[in-house]
Image 1 (cartoon, each protein chain N blue to C red):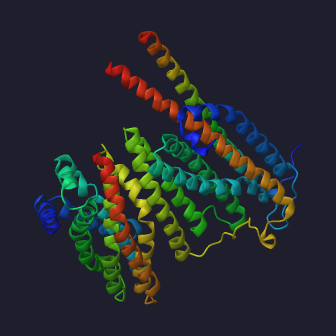
Image 2 (image 1 turned 90 degrees about the vertical axis):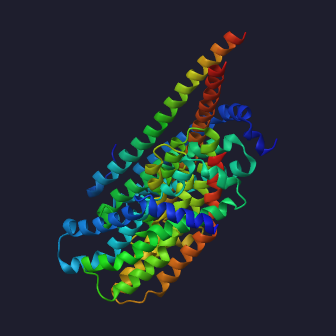
Image 3 (image 1 turned 45 degrees about the vertical axis):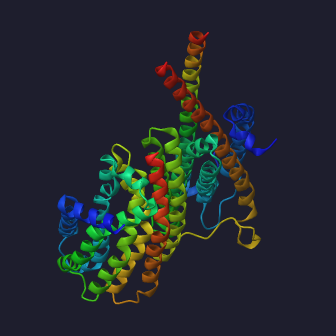
Length: 218
Length: 242
Length: 53
């Protein structure tokens, strides 16, 4: 499994595209927002946590279809299915690789963009914490969506339609943590719930993803 | 005769063709009686005026929008566990009906909300949950359309339905947490005190019966269509092979 | 005989119109698809019965 993780990471970094693209998208999106809503500092400060969360979510979405698609095309997914590692494990590793190449960099990049969007100083810590806790759930749910649509032509569009509604609870709690933290309020409840969602998806989504993969590989 | 007799497509076609006219007729009768009763012969509410008449569409549609998803969930489980094709096709047949009911509930709600709350739309927990439900229906239908192979599509959509149900419930609570709303609580419950007044209650019950029967009739009809579509595809494939 | 709907007449009537429109649309679409497939299936079945004897 560790070998698989290493292979996926190396592929993601060497193949270009996926790795930098999501981050660049996140950057461009955050830069575009002030053009849309105007440059007033207090307006930006109010919406900054939400914008950054939505930006992170969309950037995650961008690279989801690559989780399984490349391996499906060149047949290595079939090999993985017959390998001693169970498909559930493969799904976890794939989601982890996706998180390491998108979720983690996004989390690290977010404070920088917070400066651009005039995020209140109190919000930076909570923004990073909420993203760090919440983005694994995005990758795990995304891996399930990718497993569902792996064999399809034009799967990418369908993937976003399927996955975005599933992101609703994560987005609500994550943005809630970031917003309340920026306003200096107590963030305990949403943070615990967000962590609960991440833990729950970690426990359940690999099984769903593996089930979908088995169906698609039949 | 056991319930699983329905699982045989041929038996299902026979039974449903006998059942369908009755269910459809009864549903039409209930809807006509209930809606005419509600529209013409109920008094106005002292606070809401005549807008209260929208309840005869809004509440049954909302009720069936959720129950349609539950029915799809049960049908998906039956498909996963017992591999009865009719069950998978029934789930597929129910989805567009459920989506239509969801849209009706949303639209009538918006039209009702405008004079009562002064706004078409509010990001209220109930409204938002229904919007999310509509998104789930769309994703589910899109998944069915996208996959070529019938059995693969049935499997994938079943898994999607199960996972979607979990997330739909999660979203419901997340949304409650996110914003407290304008919407009143349940208008129907077993507790008599909380119910809407009797004058509105009876025609509402008739309308709900009408919507339930209509759902049943439409699902029967659409399942028959899906069974035929599957058979047609199989026959054409065999022809091409020969 | 229209009932007195008061100042909310437009809202009530439009709600009924939209809902009934959607329901009728759904029923008509379902019926049309059913009829089309029934005919198509019958054609193919007849054709195959002829060729297969």
